[in-house]
Amino acid sequence: MESIAFNDAIYYFEDVDVIVIFKQEDTHLDIFDIISKHKVDYDIILHSIVSEQTEIIHFYFTPDNDNEHLQIELISECDDTLFVRPICKCETPHFLMPLTSHA
Image (cartoon, rainbow, N blue to C red; front, side, top):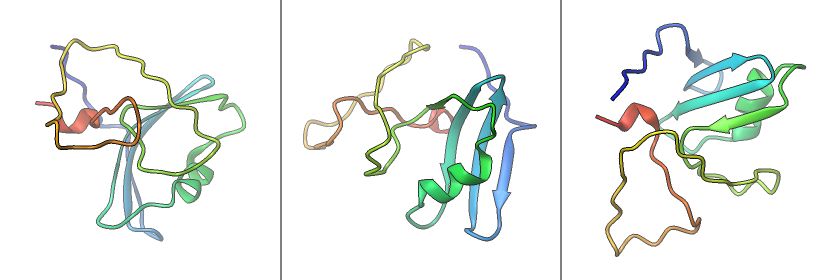
């Protein structure tokens, strides 16, 4: 499996005490992980990192958010599999853990 390094993609937002791992490439904003000790307001984070060129935002995990503007679509580019215990009841039809949690 290919190794993914985030050396130039880790940002700390002190005002909301959140670490965001993301890269902007042309019109695509790739968000690999959002790390926090508390529930995150995605709108605050997105307003901080979205540029005028951003047309599409790809979350490489399932966002824990009730935002009506998010369109959820499973795009799998890797061949590792996530097993979820049957007792886990997810509200979304697709669930993806952040890349930073993959071994």
